Each structure stands twice: as structure tokens, then as C-alpha cells.
Image 1 (cartoon, chains in turn cyan, green):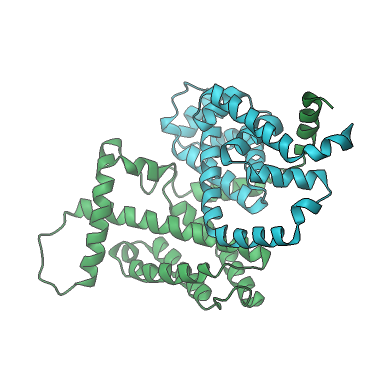
Image 2 (cartoon, each protein chain N blue to C red; image 1 turned 60 degrees about the vertical axis):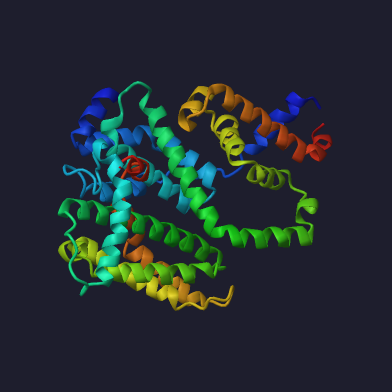
Length: 179
Length: 209
């Protein structure tokens, strides 16, 4: 059974068809949610929400784009909105953490590339970070990213370029170690 | 090292950033299926039709009116609010309440794992507890056993959170553990999400009026 038929059946409330659609796409959805959230509980919550919303809104899927593109647009919306909520709630705590890090010079003394890179990625503006993770880490095309984030392909390319530049700048002192 | 080589190294290193574990397929499906089961065949709780989009904004005003009305029970009766409009207003108020409560409890659960709770959770819980008690008295909860049971559980969890000390780092770890256990065992967040309108309902709601 092809995906169009599965969608038709899922629209009619066929649980097996929903499961088949889920099986076909859950890995990529969960991976993206995890890459963006960095927390298993949140990634599970976001994946669950994304599929529930997709199934509930299946009637609005017109098939003009691929189902995966439509699903990933829902996923990125769920994840980014969810992370904003969590961020707001954690805002005060993060400020304290940052102040503590500065006081202890943790950024300057962090010797590990992966940890430094992780902090540099965390520090990217949301748009740059999302595009960088989707493109360079999870292998999405600019067309897929544009559709998921509802931006032009050129915007996605520009954001990736700026994200890479910021990361290069943040990690330039490591360049010598890699020669 | 050229820029190209540096970027390649960066990409290699970035693969370790938030590296996902294996997808918990079955567990996730069980959660999705459980949330979907009650909805199959009857649509979402708040399946607003497009032509109602402009109505949601008005409903927000009505929700306020209904709330005020509940506080002034003995006031002389004004012109009755049409039942359909009241229903939409209550649905909207419920959706907003679920949304806020879900965000607060998800944040609480995430912070509980770190052992450092933000004291603002206590204040948020007090605020939401008042709303929960109002909602428990609402006709919607009286006529919907599932909603009533969920609100009962929320009242319990929120009341426990309000009992925590509000000074940062002063909370009892065991109390926090009991609260998160109650959240998990009762499936509170899952049930909350099942009650929240599916799809970008708030986005849809923006156009209802």
C-alpha cells in the first residue's frame, strides 16, 4: 500500500494506517526533536505531539507537498514552540548558570572540542541553530528546511552560512590543533 | 587548515551534539495510540470550523464574562448568553488553561530532574490551582467525568507543588520525587495533552472571530 492510500485510510480513522505512517517517519521526527531539544523526555513529548497533531489535521493535508515535508513542518513548529515555553520557564535559572560560568571562567578553560562546540551551537540564534542542525547534522536539504520552517530556500542557505561562520569564529582557537 | 577543512571538522564534531539514542518506537506509539483512541471517529475536542475562526476572539471576551458571572451569582440576571457562545467560550478557556498547565508541569518535571527547582513554579502552581478549582465547579466538569477526573488529579499535583518551599534549593527532594511520581503514574501530562486541541488550535483559534 502506498503512502497516499495510507493517508486516505488514516483519514477514515484506520489505526493500522496511522501506525504504518508512524513507522515510516518516526525515526526522523524523533531524531530531529532530540537534536533540537537535547533531552529525551522533551524529545518524546514533542514526537508524540507532532504525530497527534498530524493525525488530527490529516484532513488539511492536500498532498501538494510530500507527507514527510508536511509532517516535518508540524514537528519543527511543535519543537520550537515547546522549547520556547521551556526556555521561558527556565530563563531565570539559566541567567544564574551563565553568571556562574562567567565567574568561574568555564568557557575559557573548557578544553574539549565537543563540549565547546555544543556550547557554541547552544549560543546560536534559534534560526541559525535550527538550520545548522537540520542541514549539517541531520542531512535535510535546503528545500526541506525551507518548507518545514516556512522560509525561502535562500534564507535557509544564508542562515546556514552565518551559523557556520559563527561556529568557526567561536572555535577558531581549535583550528591549529586539527592541522 | 582551509575553511573547507575546518567546516568539515566542525560537521564531524557536530554529529556528537545531542546525539539521539535509538527511537523508543513502541513506547512512543503506545502514548500516541492512547491519546488518539478517544478521538478516533469523533474529531478533536476543539475542532473549530474555519467560519468560526473570527469567533474565538469574541469567545475570549465571553470567557472573561462567564468567569465574572460565576463570581456574581446573585447579581440580577442580565440578558442570557446564548448556549452555543458560552460553550465556545468555555472550550477556549479550557484550552488556554490546559496549555498553561501543561507548560508549567512540563517545565517542573524537567527542572525536577536537575534537582534545582525555580521558585516561580510555586507561584504559577498557586495561580493555576485557583483556576483548577473554578473549573472543577464549572458545568463542563460536572457533566464530563473524564475532565472532572483530570482536574481532580491536577488539583492534587498543583496543591502539592504549592506546598513546596519557595526559596531556591530549599525544596525537599523527596517531596519533589513524590510529585513527579504522581505526574507519571497518573499520566497527567499525557491526559492534559489529549485534552488540548490537536493541531495548531491556537493558530486556528486566532481566526475564529
